[in-house]
Length: 244
Image 1 (cartoon, rainbow, N blue to C red):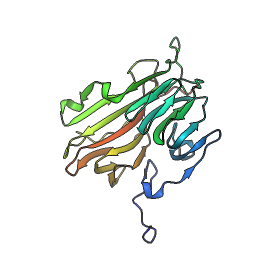
Image 2: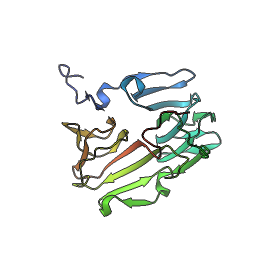
Image 3: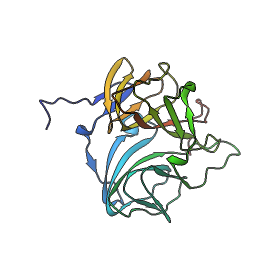
Image 4: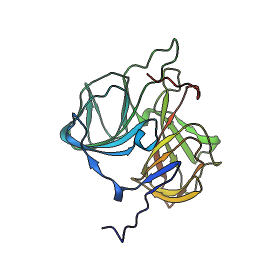
């Protein structure tokens, strides 16, 4: 129930906070037995699209022409001949069109982005993986800030997807301002996010978009760790203007 139009959701010039009470569900063309919550898209100024798919058992997500990353939140999702469970993911290069079908009801995060080619570098091939197999790195050598890279930091990839875990009370060591944009889905816990000149309480289920050069900072609050999945564009010259 909404209370006289109140929500934590907010849209600024350089950021978006989208909270579950404002989610709107819709089908996409070619989709069967599923709906999506579109979190961010070029209509809002982003250079990528991110949405959450909610599958019924045997639901199908249609293929797309651009590259796609899929991370399973819960349930069982088959990507081609590979069954993925919670915390597992798939990268699909441009034009790759395996069947994506839910073998049980479930949810998945999907990120789509036109591929930006560079000379003498071939696009990556399809692959799948699991977050639990990703090496743990400590941001700024702080053991309270764990980072797991889900995609290789290699020239074929023009974006990165990581998970970050903050122990209670941990925070980013600085306010970041940079050319990369972000899509961020809170997976666990809660905290405070600075976006531009605004400060927002955030919790599991919230989505955040940060435009290039948006001032950003996060600190975890509460008695349990905070965790999020975060996208950023990566490995390409900022002046390049010719995506595939």
